Every structure is written in C-alpha cells, then in structure tokens.
Length: 127
Image (cartoon, rainbow, N blue to C red; front, side):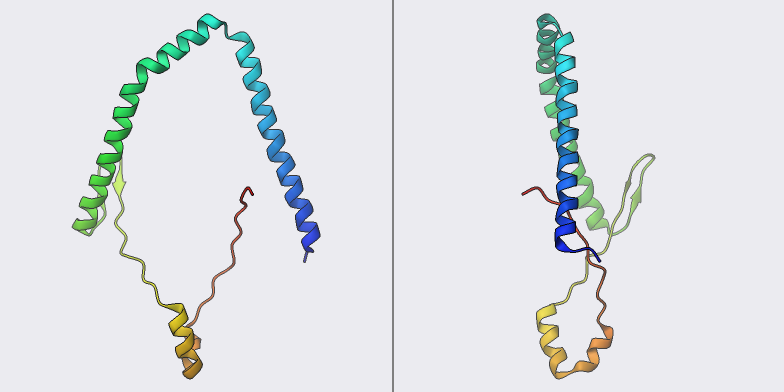
C-alpha cells in the first residue's frame, strides 16, 4: 500500500500533466489565431452571430421535448423504443434510513447479515 505522501506525489504528477495539456491547447489556439486574418475572424464572428438564435431555439426545444418524453415515459411506466432512440424507464431507487437501521441493528444484530458494503470509489476534484 502506498503512503499518503506517495499518493500526493502522484496527484502532483496528474496536476502537472493536466497543466501541460492546457498549455498545449492554448499553444494550438495561438497558432490557429496567427493564421486567421482579422477579416476571417470577423466573418467567423458574424457566422456565430447568425446561427446563435437558431442554435438557442433548438437547444430550448430539445430540452423541452426531452423533459416531455421523460415525463410521458415515467407516467407510462415502461421503456419505449423508437427508431433511433430509446427512453429507458427505471423503477425508483429503493433506499433505507441507514442511521435508523444501524440503531435497530444494535438491538438486533441478526439483521447485520443482510448488510452489504460496496467498494469505495475515488473522484478527483480541482481545489
């Protein structure tokens, strides 16, 4: 098993690699910007401006329709399959009040045979 200091060193390595990746992205963008003339940059901005209202309207319609499909399938109670998309219905997750059950298990330890503890997981977050 690695020590905390060894893991911290790995985190530093990961951070350095992420920084290198971002620097490479910025370097690439600088090279692209150097070949784009002010005229081409203006044309690109004009194109972005021209397409923005349609893109925004489409994004809004997609969000509304997605929510509508989810609501309909949730009410229908079964998975629905279209030609290219499938709306997968899943029953609600079952959960238990762990704190209350732990208290109950102190008085009734026989219920602990039903306890399952999953594998731990790790997520990496920027601080």
